[in-house]
Structure formats: structure tokens, C-alpha cells
Length: 135
Image (cartoon, rainbow, N blue to C red; front, side, top):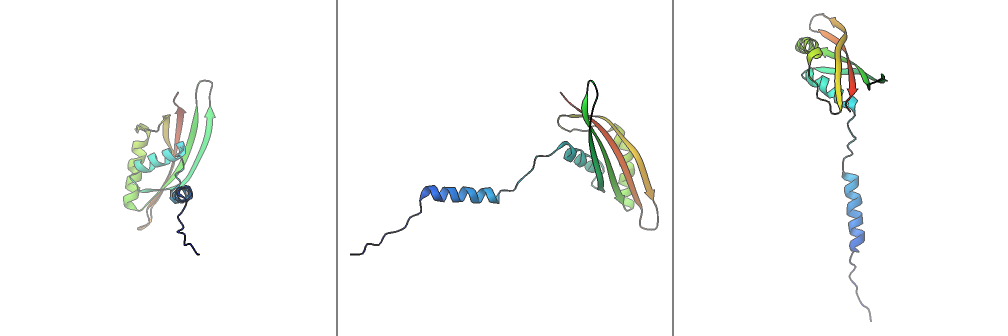
């Protein structure tokens, strides 16, 4: 006598397979660093008209404070972008940044390279920010 059996999946195996599949499908979101937040803040101040060319971050400390120094090069290409770059230069020193856990002690423009030529107006701005860790 032959007995047909219905194969039913083990509920524990099914749950395990579903959870590992959902873990694989979940997007990995790395934690945003202070450098990420500085870049985002400057690009927002540039009204989205700048491209980031370089970003250098160095830790520093004194007897009473510690923090980081950020030097960023932003490129503004085209007349509309260059106009936004000029506004960026004017606004940077007095801008109130909101970077969690950080206080922007100083924000300056170290260098500006402005080139004209037909429809290819271009400006590269080097900005330096000194951040202090809030305690």
C-alpha cells in the first residue's frame, strides 16, 4: 500500500529564508559623518549650483578644544552658477550652520579662481571651515 504524503514547508525554515532575503534586499545606509554633513551644508548654501572638486579633513586639538578643519574646493560653472558662487562667497563667513554635535567656529574663503571666456564662465572657490566638537 502506497501512502501519498503532502510535503509542507517547515515554518522555521520558511521564516529564516524570508528574513535572510529581506536582509539582503534592505539598502545599506552608512552613518553620515561630520564631513558628509559639512559637504551637504556647503552645497545647500551654494543653492545646488556647485560641484565638489575636493574635500580635505584634518583633526586638530588645543588645550581646551578639539575638532576638525575642513578645506573644500567647489566649482561653479556657467554664468548662473557663478552668480550663485558670488552669493556663496558673500554669505559664507556669517552663515549659521547646523551640524549636529559641532560648532562652526570659523568659515572663510581661502581662494577664488574666476575665469571668463565666452559662454564658459567658471569659478572655483576654496572654503575652509574650522569645527569644534560640542561637549
